[in-house]
Amino acid sequence: MTVNIFPPTPATGPTAPALEAFQQAAQQGSWLHVSQDGAQWQVMATGTTPSQRSVAWIEPHADTTSAFVQALGQSFSQGIQKAVAQELGLQPAPGRPLAARTVLQALDMAQTSQNALQGVDFLTQLSVSATQGSAAFTEACRQLALDPAGVDAGQRARIDARMQQRFEAAAASLQSPVAPATARQWLLQELSAP
Image (tube, rainbow, N blue to C red):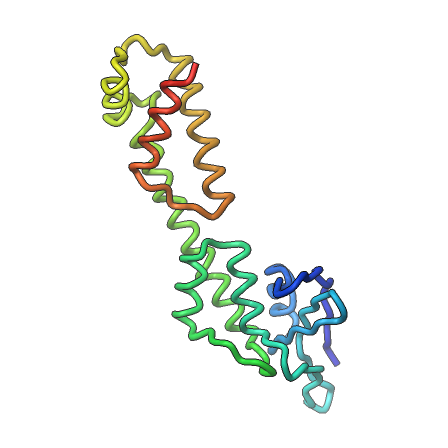
């Protein structure tokens, strides 16, 4: 019999188990279930006995699919979460297990989407680069009545480093991709900073 119970994740109200628990369970069994034991959530993989009988403990009101979609939203942006759920038809299904292959497919789709969005941010970051002397940098200098030639290489490197921090913070708070207008506003703020 292959039944694996993964580390519970504290739940306050409707908090879902961590995405990692779903991924680990999906690698161990064909079907996943969530179970709440007091204030703790668990993700369990359903296994089979040597005689091919399925083994699982299913709570009739536990909604594994909704918990998984919620966990996606904790690790990926709302846009990615919504797109993956829509593409795979992930709808609430209380008392029903979730296929491990669906979890793995959803994780692959979400990661691929996130990588694509990071590529968009990379291009946006290049478009506002002070070190590269981008058109956005030149325009920002003009708006602030600064001579771009008067901003030395060290200052430009520091501006780009602070812009990198802003892009990283946006990605960490699931606000990626950064709109070009937002990046240009950040650049103006960085050029205005002492």
